[in-house]
Figure 1 (cartoon, rainbow, N blue to C red):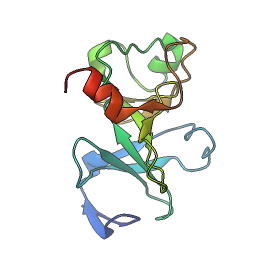
Figure 2 (figure 1 turned 180 degrees about the horizontal axis):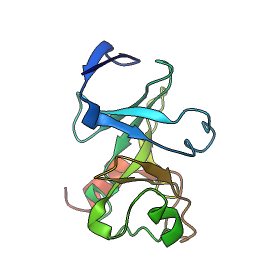
Figure 3 (figure 1 turned 90 degrees about the horizontal axis):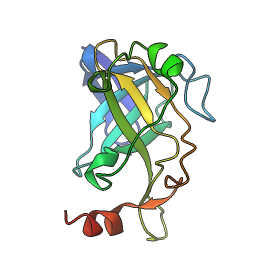
Length: 147
């Protein structure tokens, strides 16, 4: 177990299997490379908590929950750089924005996080498909998907 300081839960013990490494960091946060993947109290969300600073945490969601038609067209070299050789090797998550003003909760489908399940190394890809934007209304699309 590793003890970390979290933004949402204070001090917390996490299993080494919850630790993810992003060799290139995340867009805008390139110098922070190690994170813990935590279940959020509110399902179906997760927290991606920086191991370096407690103030840096992201809310995540599985994009396939509200967009069954979602597809990740990432460069093979990018995926193989973290050990992903087959689609079933990958865990795909989207960063969620929860506005303080009560406006819709949105998910970024243009910049998914893709993690190799075995090595727990990940990358943030940039999708060029015009269907995927940085702000998809999660609740509206869940309702449209019949969830």
